[in-house]
Image (cartoon, rainbow, N blue to C red):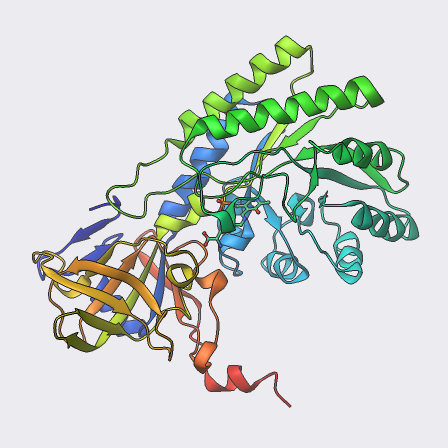
Length: 431
Ligand code: LLP
């Protein structure tokens, strides 16, 4: 199996962390998000330990909430020694409601509203990642009005083009995120920020994109960030004590994808930064990273029930499941590849070529096209692997389909962490 926590049992069913997927589906209903908490914890530990080993004191990974935001994730990442990146009042409130310490929150967002800026300051968010000069002014107003000095990082774009999907490639000069170095605007941004009242500039943030396989892209990012930091020091006399490198490590979704050795990559990035700092005579900054996908993606499996199975003569067969783009819009948005199994016959040969379609009235509602699974019957449980990141987080109520439940598996126990939505939930906000 592609992931080590998956196997098959004597009934030929898929097991996830030892749990029979068909039993989970019977107990909690379908569609069902299943999250193996032990995989999440192991990933957190890999980041925490590697960053402690290879990087200066104070370096730490921050979980990118956008990948999977619900109350139950925060005690897990907090207890493993991670901070968190949040991008909205909603994500802040979710983290705080789960008891996450506000001082370990890094508040992102390219277009925070003034109300959100005020809320972040009020709630004692540890650090703002300030995206632009407008936000800086709003933050200064809110902080000085409350008599506080807010720690900030300034988000810059390093002008890199890593090989990933255009929709998730954020480090280019032409981007709505951050302030570009190349045009000279980033330097002006720092010049202004270091004299702005109510904020204390700690360093710089840059995020080059997501689902990136090559460590070399991150080394290029470090080079550009360090060169910029040196220019800032020479021009303005300001020395950064922190670099936040964003997220982006890739995960394998299908057998042909490589898997990324997180610890080795962190070691390589650390060595690279250390060498660069030595050469430039720049004090080694502490480093923050913001992994999302690589913490939760392969900890997740979505279980569906197969519904109608339809063969269009001369074309293809469709297996229709009881969810789809509403719980996982990634194929519709990015044509993302997934590994799909018939969890009811996980040990049978995968010899039935089909397209997995969702239940929405939209021909783009697909999970995977032209794949092979063991021939399903109506009622079989269909498992889609590595759905822990950007699935629940990006789910919708399109067609008034209700959001699935989410179950967490930990130490041999299953716990309902998000209950299935009801019709009452759907109608709750409508007057
Ligand atoms: N930090 C910042 C500033 C980000 O914008 C992101 C992702 C991350 C960290 C986390 O990156 P990760 O480690 O998860 O790659 N919806 C898309 C992904 C969008 C990513 C946006 N930013 C998808 O489903 O692939």
